[in-house]
Length: 419
Image (cartoon, rainbow, N blue to C red; front, side, top):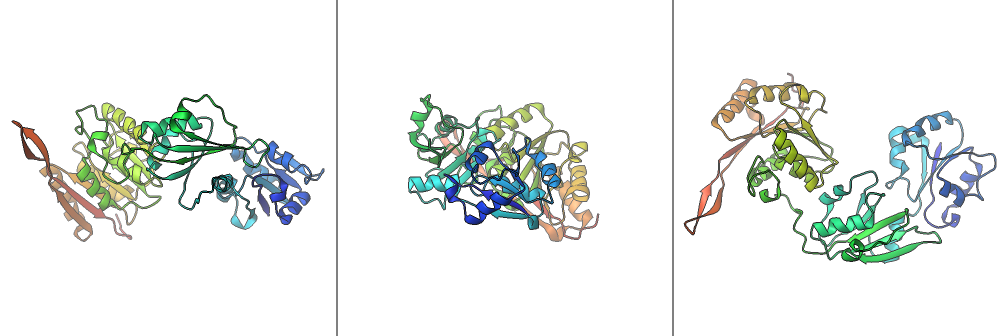
């Protein structure tokens, strides 16, 4: 067995008797210098000691080398809560692991604040860009942020101010349980204008307040928020009403792999990724200028973790290296709709997956329906047509100007489909 022991906060008194005895009698112990110093009185002189390797992948051969020994791996708090436990579960059989959790720093922080934390959203920025916090931000909400050197409290305060949460309060909880423990409260303005430094071991608690409204809190991102190089709300993006209908047809689930073919400036793929942070969205586009705005919009909305931008021409080689999709949206095909549909259906789309095609021209509608007829897929098809009008002013009078009609066609692949 590999014993994974969480140390909690404070001294060794927080450890159970069983955990103490396991540490005393182990053959091999892996942990940081700080963790080992805390346990100095418990570690036997004959115990073989190792630091956590860097990179962490080197832990695998170390574990294998000592697989017949009594091995202890030290962790902070609960090993299965943003800890080493997740990595171990991917590399070691569950039957070989025994976890001994302890109080986490986040649990301790909210206890100090006397604040219930069952509704708190916990975000790790360890090794992740600071802007990846953006899709999570909602007004009047509590967050616990695990930070690194690139996401210090003043950086977080700048993000909050930029997106309308300028009245938020932040608590920086440092070195919890140690002699130099500190918990300090700040406003956004105080942190931005401060030169205060913080202990490397800290977490940041946020209660968001402000006018907000810059980042969306409900599906249907305004067209005007996307950068396209054109006037406000114009340019190569799937417009809001069509986007909402397409997302509804796609019915994306957690961990789905999704393709946006002909992504343009990213209206569809960015919103898709924004509301489905646990799914992987691949945006394929070949137009250089649109790719540039696609990347700008990706960063603006913070979907840098789950939105992958692929530069290339569909329907050919660029798709071969991608994971097979569960959902495909075809917003543009550069007069290659039939070839794109055929390849996606026959070669790429997973069983029970679906394709949603956005058809504006009569030729695209004809091609899509011809494909459906030839494959005898009528029983799997769902179609909707979207007709919208927008208010405009002409000679100081308001009028409703009709927009281009868009037909969305959804084709669902049977579970036992044979090409």
